[in-house]
Image (cartoon, rainbow, N blue to C red; front, side, top):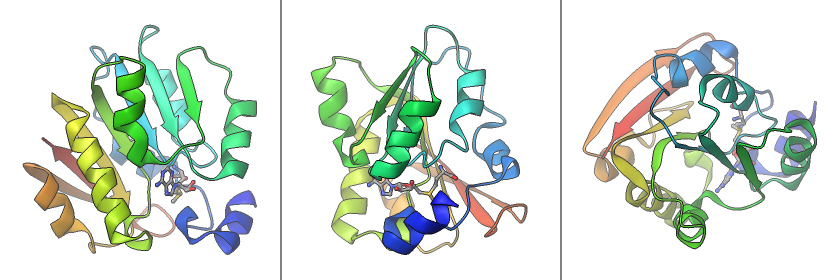
Length: 180
Ligand SMILES: C[S@@+](CC[C@H](N)C(=O)[O-])C[C@H]1O[C@@H](n2cnc3c(N)ncnc32)[C@H](O)[C@@H]1O
């Protein structure tokens, strides 16, 4: 219900219901997290993916969440009690500043649910630039979207973009797996 209410107030929420577990599996199902020390999630919302990612990462791995919506941010801080998680009420654009200030190095994986098609061009470019500069050389940026509208933009920022699709979500979704 909070997704629907927040969507009616803020376009940047992007959808009226949380993502399905099928879409979650397309995002992180095939990933080997055994060597990951830093994982980032952009736009966790109510945490549809977050608990599953937490179940997969190691005890010494840090998961940083960037969520701009204050209602979702407050829900996440109440529902997630895990010392590996840092929950921020900040824009994904700020990943570079945050990692530099905390001296945390670069990310192994960034999972993004941000609705690129609904946010201003300048902001999405800045998010993608910051993601590229804050990923390890073998890292991956994994983004889902409901359309192919930003496929070209992703290909401009990343060296390799692999595309997957699932009908088993509302709405059906594309998953872009991007390498630097
Ligand atoms: C489509 S919802 C996805 C929520 C959840 N990950 C899921 O899949 O069910 C997109 C989320 O991205 C957040 N968001 C949008 N723009 C953002 C930005 N620039 N930085 C961080 N979060 C953002 C929205 O507030 C919303 O919670």
